[in-house]
View (cartoon, rainbow, N blue to C red):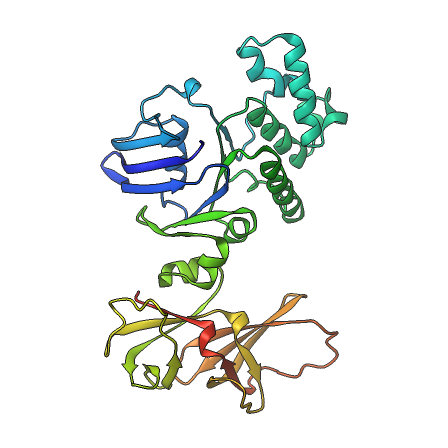
Length: 364
């Protein structure tokens, strides 16, 4: 079992509290992403798991083994850093073989393991090249191979793709997913990039600025059903409307100042805070909205506004629309056809539509 269990972990630096009573379970054999803003304590948690730092309080387990005070070299945990940390004086083969030689494995076993791992990461033809002859993506794969060849129970990845350009980063994300699927090792991926986390993760956790876990779930659960406005706004883009909850026998409404009463849906498992008169928030993803210059009848919700800006992304277009309450909402439309004319332009008066089941009520 390679499940990582964090129990009541606390960590401070010079009286600055980074992690306070943190509890988290990272499932065995999964690609787990830890997502949060800079300074939220992600890297601190990774260093505690790896053994680079000591906890002030709490316990860390891998499987049933308490590793809280286990030396680094006995943890069966390897780390891949953003800076690669390769040995420049060693070639590709020797970089990957380094940890195996430290363990004093037989030469034939080392050669077999290194050859196999370089084949997995697609570097068998670069086996004897110097590190300075490799591209950024190839260096990252060497770092991965060196970490994985030691067969760790857990592989920690601390923003490993941040130094790569966009195209190479996207390619490496696919390679990481395939590598984890092949090895079945527990991967813990630290990032502040929401797109990366959504792409790679089987399960993900969202940390807030105070070092607390806001939500744990699959990428789809977290994106579609965030538990707080922080999660909704940090993971992807969203529009937040605030108002007072109005409960009738036949329907539930959100009374938003200057915009009126908006139909909403309460979840089947109704939370304790969902009561008459509660001040709540409504999260609506930009791609769930429909924009039109004409009135439509097949949507449950409609607001009016004026287009203030248009941003063309190629595959999609973003419209920023100013509502009557001076709130600007974002609307994403998919460009699934060739655009020959601009149907909606700056300063146009438009209607914004959405189905009430595509919005989520939040307490805060």
